[in-house]
Length: 261
Image (cartoon, rainbow, N blue to C red; front, side):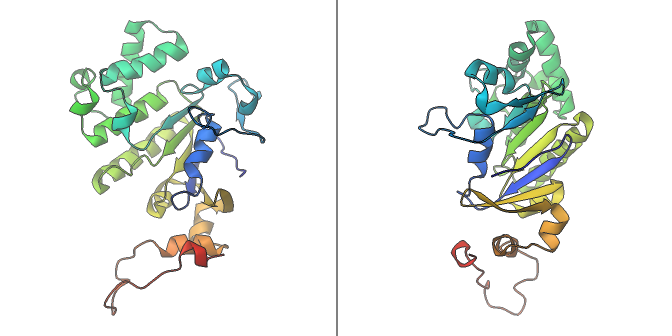
């Protein structure tokens, strides 16, 4: 597995469940080693720092990685209700990230949390900043997760299936928000999903994964209009198309992954 993400760019990572998308993201964050027997034995994960130097994350100790996670690299997880702490107000959870990485006072960090609520377009911010996760809708909770991810101005934002748990209308709002915030902040983004429609809407380049390997990568237009690999064509053919059942009594079969070798 090898790819680069440029500043301000959105790299879409697609593939079926179990293809290695989330494992790749957790490996970048060095979280794959937390609470599991997994171990990264070789390779490089290079991060360009604000001073222009390059840091290989695989060579860093855990205190250094803690200073990078949430600061230089942030991650939005799939289900916000299991990612947020249920016993702390959401505003306090945003402020905590600011205090840890920037050493701000509680008052200053709460002011930043309030600013982040405005940035991610959460209405009635003064009221909602004191709410607990269970008091908010799924879309609002995901906006809080985005605020936590962006509060320290990361150079890379990893979004792991950020809209899977949301209904279609809220999905569109969250995707539009992420794209707009990316333009405003210049943050690079790695977007992990199995939804090719999301990739077409948001990504600049695409990496297609299967069985923990990259089978194809390129600009989003090239991947969608002239894919080279059979596996990529199979993924695209699995996307439902309006009118595709015209003249047929039922859905037509499509090639499964095992038939695409």
